[in-house]
Amino acid sequence: RPVLLVNLKRILPSISKSEWLSNSSPGPYTTMRTIDGNRIVELQMHIERIVASSVALFKQIRSNSDSLKRQLPSPSAEQTLSSASVFGTVFKQHVKQALSCFHDKGLQPADWTETRITMLVNWDQMAVEEDLSDSTEATSDVDFNIGVYVEALPSPPTERVSVMLRSMPATMTTAEGKDSKWMEQRKYLEEEKGDCNEVVLIDERGLALEGTQTNFFVIVNDCVHTASGSEVLPGTVRNIVLDVCKQAGIAVKEQAPSLSDLDQWSAACVTSTSRLALPIHKLILHREVTGTTREHNIPQSALMARIVKLVQSHIR
Image 1: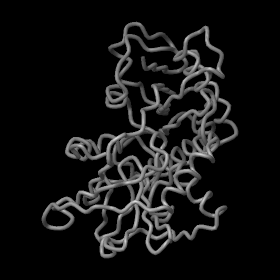
Image 2: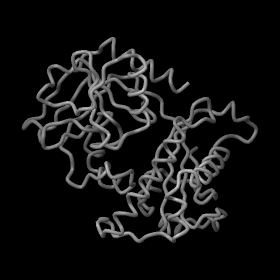
Image 3: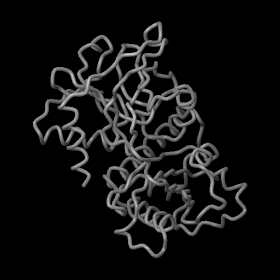
Image 4: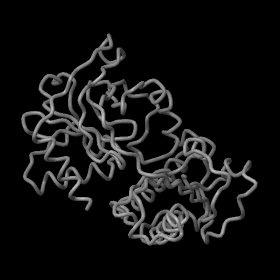
């Protein structure tokens, strides 16, 4: 059963992650996974993501460009959230407590099953707490909210993977940092994707940038193509793909794939915490992208299979 902790206190009765996030004040967040039960993959990057997203949000608030008109946190909270070394200690404390609550007390950490962990940081009162009579006052030493949701890591899909291509929403702001307000903005895309595993977003130039929850890669002429880190929110697994390709001597071009070259795509995948590198078998091109909805099958290449294995080996 999933576990939610807010400021180190378990929230009861249990609620779904979507309910928690929908009813919480938006803020910087990150989603992680464990390996070998108790190790966080790319731990430092997740700490730095929260810090970078917080700093970006502080700048937006000061410049009056935050669409949600949020307020700055207290000076001490801003100081903590602006330093990876200071926030890192707090981060680890909250994740450790949440993992301990999720697993049976009789199990040693080495025997824990794999989990997916979502952390949300904000500094307004969390609306979700108002209806939860079993929640108690925070015991955390920081003067901002930290919510941690732990759930079993989803199993990889066993069927052929389809991905829908849709036009990028005008409200999309993920490149500015990982802010949970995007979860609300992307809700209509999630509701309309049908059986597709993910929705990949196409900009006005016809370039495939990223998924709603993933980064996107294609192979063209034995070269891996993906949007540059300045155009998208670089995920932890995206960075792993780039690293393993460099180590293996696989050519990479940080340039967003173009739909005009679709017939040259010899393979494609999406990457995320739970998916790692997940090969795509079929694209559904939405009518808003091509005028009429149509399907396009993606070949399966030996090079993509090699990259998938390299990523799996890396996290071990």
